[in-house]
Image (cartoon, rainbow, N blue to C red; front, side, top):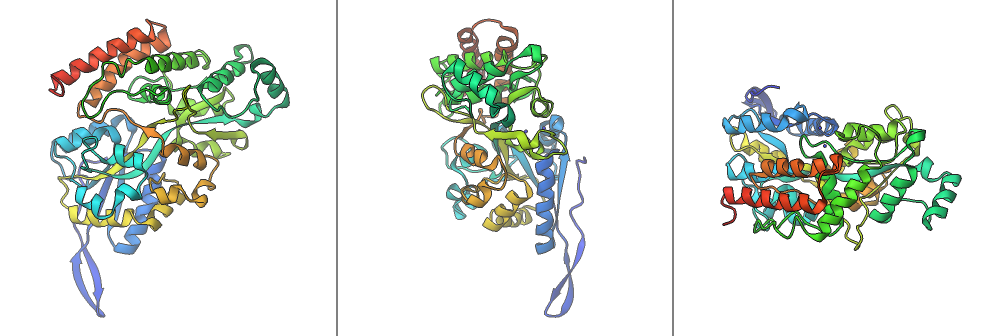
Length: 438
């Protein structure tokens, strides 16, 4: 996944040294993030830091729809309201090139974070430009697109028998995208108000694109060459054409009125008995194992995005890295906080509270993988994720992809090849406009 623009950063505190009381400046730190459960978990975590260090840390939040606008409004004004920001992975190019983020390369290398954090989180949350060895964020909230499903539907003996008779193999967690498609078709029964699958279709930000990426990456495709900005022959490749066609076919098995759906609707597909399977970010899965929010909690299972036709298995990356804002008046304290945040014991506690750690050591531990019904799938996914463009013009690229792909998937306009050829032309023109390519 989904205020104030000023903060008071100074105060006077009491320090005890050698049995004598002396006065020292009492520091405060403000972290800006979107309004969702992980931000609440982060506040719980930083309360522990305050207990240890005496430094008060406040996690300020705003709704997802306002998050980017508020953050960049403050950045562009060179404001010091925020000391750190847990920013979307796509922001890293714009924020680093404009000087909004502190360069964390030395910090990153000093603590060997390239080895400490899951490799994909380093590549997409922290490094910019691609393969440059320059780092601007510390992987903080790992996330990716995965799947939930109705175990009771899948394990019904009559359903299992009927599925085997029709498709020739056992009904179970899909082993590839073909099986995902077959299962969606099998359970799609509009007359019974039961449907096959719920996928992302909302084109107002990145939901639809994240969903399509799930298909593209697992079909062996790419969005482009992030180092050279080459897109022709890549975004409109044969693999991507097939992937887009596969995603469109899944849309035909969704519940009615599913043309503007994101994380809320996709969870509702499970809680309201609408669909056999549902796509969503792992960050929204805790609600599905809570009986208070999901009456089907005991019957809900989870799986990682399945491989495509050639065995490629990847998923669209969500999540964020935490960066130090270059206009902060408390950068030294912010760096001390990051020293604490990256410790193994802190990352373990972060995961226990409900945050999605990017620590490879924690992710690989049996303790983490067995903690929830979806942690194993999350672990598998976080080593197999890819992301959208992180260049400063990513917002234009995102709008262009939505404008091309949405009418095809939800309105049956054009062919997949025509759509992706047009998108390649759009993106090439955008990169020329910004002098990325000649």
